[in-house]
Every structure is written in C-alpha cells, then in structure tokens.
Length: 624
Image: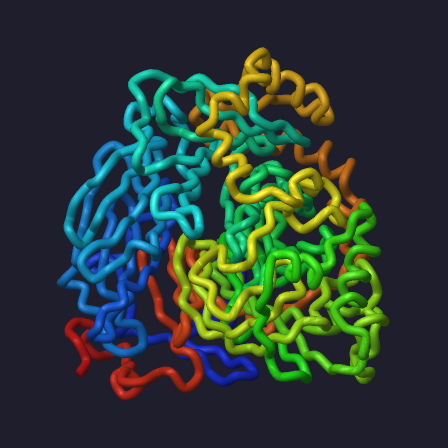
C-alpha cells in the first residue's frame, strides 16, 4: 500500500505538482469510478485498468473510457478537462460472475459513434469481444478454457488489423486470434513453426481455420505485459523471469533481450519514435533500453516498491533539429538506402554507418528530450526526462553535436533525423489504451522513425527485415521479402510447417529446458497449472541463479555501469497502489486499486473546470 513515510508531510496525498512546463492539477470533478463513489475493497482482486478510444464524434465529445473494478466493467463518455464526469449515466455496465475482467483494449480502426470493438480478458482465461455502445456480446474466445486455463494478463489488437488480436496469459504463452475464426470444441494440437533462445512459436494443426492461429511460449513464468512498437513491426514482452524480449513480429525473430536488476518485469512501453523501450518491475527501477544498440542506457530510481506501469508522454517528448522538417518520399529501395542497413553483426559499426550515411555536414545542433512517467505499488507517480547527457554521454553538452563524433554504440542516430516535436500519432500504451497526441515526426533515416501521420501502425515503407542485418539475432534472410512471407501468413499455410511435423510440443519444451541454464521448471509444468502463485514461486527460485549469470553483462549492467536517473517529480497521489498511467493531449490519467480514475490537467489546460475545481462542492452533475 502506501510507502513508509516520515510523518504527515510524507504521507499527504498530492493534488498538484510542478514541472518545467508548469503546474499539473488534479481535477476532482473529472474523477471516474463506480457510480456510488465508494472506495473498492481491492483485496485479492485484479488490477484496475483503463482503456480509451476516440469515436470521432461530431459533437467534440469523441473520447470513450472503459475501466474495470473487481467484477464490474464500466463504459462512459470521457469528458476530460472540459466537463465534470456524470457517473449516473454509464453507456454500459457489466457485472461478471465466476470470473473478473483483467485487461481490455479498443480497436481504433473500427470505432464509430455507433459501434466500438472492445476486447476484454478475464481471470479464468477467456477473452470476450463486446460492443458496449450496441450492448452486444459478439464472441467469446477460449470459452471452454481448452486453449489456456490461466489468467489473461494483456490483450491487444494487432496494429493496423480489424480482426487479429494478441492475448498473453500468466502461463507464459501468447496467442494470436482472428475474430472471424472459432475456437473449436477440442484442445488445439500444435506444430513447431519456429524456435529460438528461450522462446518457441507453434501453429495450430487443423483442417479448417480455427483459433488460435499461433501460440508463442516466451520465457519462464508469466508473461506480464507486451507492447507493439509505434510502427507495429516489433513486439516487446515483459516476463516474470525478469527478461525483456523484443521480437520482429511478422518473422518471429528475436531482436534483443534485457534482464531486470532482480525480480520480474511487470510493464513495458515504447518511445514515440520506437528508438527506446522502458520497462519496470519488481526491482523498483525503471530501465531504459536502446532498440538500435540492444543495451541498457539508463536506469531510474525513485519508487519504493514495484513499478506497475510505465508510459511515454508523447506531447512533452521533443526531438528538434536545426533544419526544417522534410518528409520522406520515394521507393522502398530509397528507404533502405537512407536507413543503410548494415550487414555485419557489430552494433557499433552499423549504428555509426547509419549516422555517417545520413549526412556528412556534421554541423547541425540537435536537442533531444524524452519524457516518460511511471506509477507503482508505493502509490507514487514519477516523471522522468531522458536527456542528451544520457543519450550522448561521451560528448560535452556545450559542443555542437555532429553526426560523425557521436560514439558508436552510445545511442541511436537521433542526430541525423529531421524531426520536430509536434507529431500527430496514435500509439498503444502500457495500459491497453489509445493515445491520440500531437507530434509531427517526418524522418526517414531511422528504423522505427515515424512518418508524418501514422494511424497506429504500418504507414512506413515496409521491410520484413527487422532492424536490418546489423543487429544480433535479426532476420537476415528476408530482406527482399514482403509481408506475405510473415509468420502470421505461415499459420494459414499447412505446407509451410510440414517439415516440422516430426517435432512434438513435448520435445521442443524438453530441448529448451535443457539448454536454458538448467532452470528448475519447464514451460510444460507452468502451463499445466493455473495458479499464479506457483508461477511466482518458481520464478523466484530461478531469480538468484539468473542474476548471478547476467549481472555485469550487457543483459544486466551493474548499477554503477549505467547512468542513474532521478525523477523530476515523485509524488504520492493515492491511498492504494497505482495501476494506470496514460498520457493524453490535454491531461494525464491515473488510477488506483480503490477504483478511482483521476484526471490531471496539463499546465494551462484546466479549462471550464478551473473555477469549479473545489473538493468541497458536489461531485455530481455536469459543469456547463
């Protein structure tokens, strides 16, 4: 619960905080919760989660909010900083028996004022597709729990798709579904499709199309959260075994890994340009990992307990170059030439070559600041700035940054890009929500840089080669292939997996078990148990052995080997553990386990509620 403090001052709940932009203020009238506003007794219940979607309503009230509290699921019009919340009029309310909602996600592609597609995962393993506007239940997946009996930990629509979605379970498995397919009346049979270091991908053996299309087994213990990169091509997975694993999604190739300082990783998110990943977990730290360099570049220490959510602030993150922004246009070949994928395996050389290839004038100043936030079980909100002295540690700040003197393997080529801070993107954040934010990135030189408008996913010229051959474990054999050769499409083609038919699921697990540092439990053992406590106990037994092998390596540098960030802001903002942090254009949203969803107005965005924001006044009704 609350962190131990040294008196009343330490344990006081904050209602505002100040950063360099100004003052963020809690809008008490914009608090969403159960209609009775009674704090929820959260003992033994699943975390409160929040999802947003914009339905492009002509009235200007296009935002919709969904949140779960215990056995209940609510769907409201979200009025944000504009008007007070009217909790007496939920658009939809559902109460479940025998199981609890654990996570949810809207599909932004299909959302209209008349209909939205909302996926809801449950504690018993099922996934429901509902339309809370039409008040319909379209489909129930894994209804008989034949696919997986363990709790659903994360559910996401595949970016750019109206029908594909991905579901993670506490068993450590990840399943790809198609809403058009049924789940079948018997347990699925699998064939090995691809296997790598501590992960395997299986396709479902079936004469007709059925769910799941694919099953991924990733790491040991629960898969706590996953997040798609802004361009939709990569998947970052945070697991209870303490590993962050980043995959090229279509080819199911492992791009890179990182290990927590100790304990499991609980949350993960991508920077708006896809260059950095931040993860948090049971080591009370936030860890910043470079996608291009595949290494930890910083850690942040401010929380006193487990970090439950990390998220980038798309509006405050800024990457500014001396030149005016230039849009990228041209063929796929031109795009490859600008990115300049390396063929060697040294990350330093490939990173350096991209910098020198992009431009040789070496005289343009660039300023880079990434803002991200975190909330934890210590009830504290922390805000962090990732600045140039961390991204470019070997250069004096007074010097003009150039393209050739940036130390290789120090940072992604942020200096070479022509981006401005105001970017309009739609990204998936760690809470399963959709943030529409204002940013305008127009760079063509980075692997995951964003085009001018990126509606959630793949507007970039497409390459199936994840991050090029210059990164370890990247898929070097498909540089000329298109999306038709992806592993998702392979799931539909029986002939593509025929050669794997002799390998059974048991064999693949046994092989991985033997070569995986002799860990003392296998995925098969975990999958057969639905108890999350067993997962945690098993993972904790291997934690000490893993830490001894990885500490001091590039997977997990020692504390003194990487910069340690201090939070800009570290404030206690709730009585119970925090479970939600979402950055929106004019506010940020937090939620705690008591079931209260709070809106914090950005500086200058208090709007109509500024004169009404009085905790003593009545919270009901709409402020006009």
